[in-house]
Image (cartoon, rainbow, N blue to C red; front, side, top):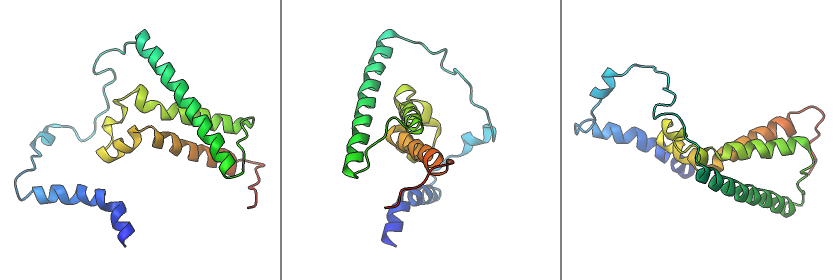
Length: 154
């Protein structure tokens, strides 16, 4: 039970906090009455994107460092578990490439996750979780659910 409460403590705080604030008249929902129930986002609400050379070059450096670090981590992890990484397998290269692409989202588009709830945005904006969630999904899709793949017996 203790582990369960630790895992849902943030959710409980999200529920209990506003409920406790209602009797204290600290909750003001009047602004919500003028908003539509559903609304599509407005693209380029802050103007057209600008591409500046200094930003592009600094992001390229960050990406090279990030890719090098991720590759080294995967190779080291493969050695620790005594299953070396096979970078020649086509599906493994796709998994790494797509995971890196999604992992860089928080760095390239810092405002992307602001539409999510605060706790989700905090987790996803780290970039680590976005990359590993996609890596796990693609790994399951390509390596475990794909045709002709046999799972090695431990």
